[in-house]
Length: 120
Image (cartoon, rainbow, N blue to C red; front, top):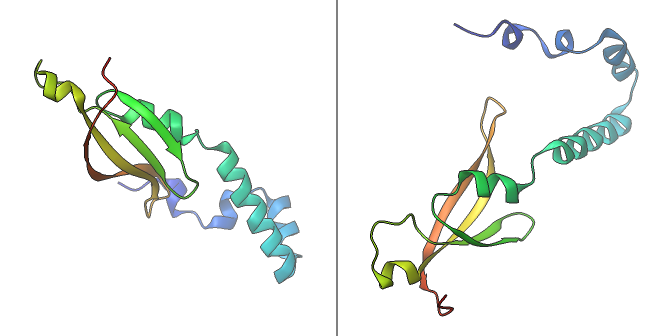
């Protein structure tokens, strides 16, 4: 069954005073409002570093935010006690992925395994 809020038109989901004010704006002003809304949405998001730490399986060794994507070095979840497995490090490119329903999740792209030269 669908959510009743989803069935409402966008203006019906906003306060009447806001809709009336937006209806008075021209194209240039609406672009500024759009930029402001995008900025507010970005500011209200949980930092990607926190999301990565919550979602990652295995030990995260480093997180390097590169703006449009983030590089993550992590050890895979332990599958044994061998020395080789503990030195193996996987490299991932992580991005935020927006779904059609508006939900955002992390998208992990495996870039490859490297051997950790820093033994503990």
